[in-house]
Image (tube, rainbow, N blue to C red; front, side, top):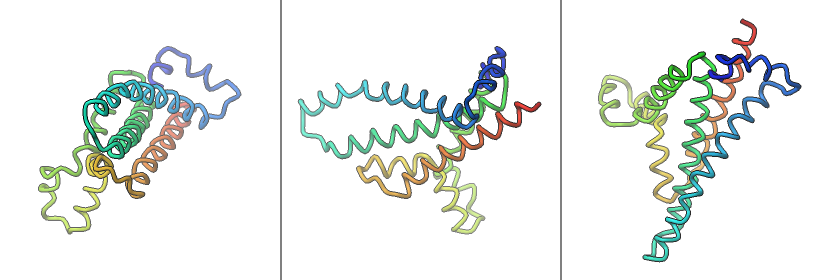
Length: 171
């Protein structure tokens, strides 16, 4: 979005007979498919590990699913941050900062800073951590709350992306 706004092609995209929501979802799905293909290219390593040993393939499949979901969350956040600015570098820095906050929110260092808060607040902060939700998946257990976390985060940031582009379109 930042590069489209900077180069002036955003106006062309917005005049096409495609609703804004579909354009946002289309850009997101294209990036997510690219990421999925890149992740699928690691499949030969899985074959090598199976040839050399006897790994738990369920854990490996769960890890792939978790990686794809976390990548989708990162992409949705990045798309939303890119819609906020004209500069790709600033969009990258914003995206990295927001993703870093989501990653670290469940770490002991961050949680120790909130020792004064009630237990439910600490658990709420911890529940927003990518690592907390991803580690559950990497154990080979795909729980519904972890799926709901990643999918709802993707949906929220895609919706925010649509709102930001719509607001910036009128200005």
